[in-house]
Length: 424
Image (cartoon, rainbow, N blue to C red):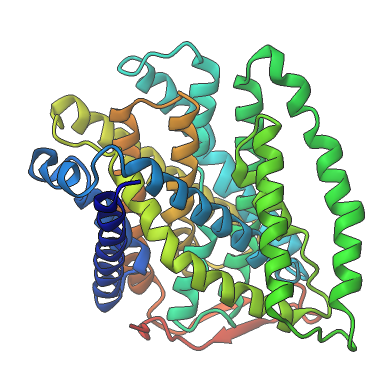
């Protein structure tokens, strides 16, 4: 790299952080999760603004591969954090209700998404028709577990019954989504690479049957309150990076390996360790993920947005919102949840955030999405995430009766409303 390129790269990083965190802070001031402002920052820095003059000046082509490499590291650690944050204890006592809600929240939008995929094929032809249709169904079925957890925390709902059901349901939906995405990517691989994809089976078995017990033994030292150190945290990052490298070498995406490594981290007796790992990982990703938003935004081009694109965006939003909202509501009502908390749960499950962007990035890299459709789906992710806060405020602003799953008496529990308490 030349001296000018180094200077421009450092300037770009500083500028990205200022804009992303600035817009993220402004988003929180109006009751939105920070990711809304951060995604918007990436779109604004893309070719849509000023006919690409901003992106071409700030991010010339020789700098973009470097930013892309940093974004890949950020997403790897983000996926490790997602796996780490999926708390298996959240499912205890809520398994039946979470399974019922997650079934509706996944199956209904997926089926509607299959029909949407057939509709979109007319304007976005591809040789991988079956994989494209399944991918579209998956793309509209996603829920962003990290964003949902942040919304619940900001509104003081984490410790409530509704918050627990939402977290348990989102955890199941996330696991199903990543598993399905892995299946889609395995299906579109070349015939000569299928033997490498088959290595995922022994890889997963080794993680859960060998690595996880070893981690449990390590974390339970000191009466189950293992203290963290820089070397221990470095080992966890090394594990996440190596697992990401392994799945990438198998012909899968690196996000799957990082996610699995976070998922196998033991929870029993290691609460303080997990909390510290999550906090440290968030610190690193807060610096690297804004780069991913910009790299993703550089691929969003809305300059040719016309009537055809408007019709496609309307269809995408209709299927994504109606499918996720209606499916979650039906699943919640079917498990005995009252009407208003069922609507609130449906609003929460409609958020997509960065999880959607990661999935869309995989689809774009695999050749399932072209630039136009990728741009429309990014807009969908932004709109549905921004909808969550206002919908939740309107549907969950008064005290409500929510039955506690697994209660020995079967009696409902009255929850105190704190939905208007938003942390900046």
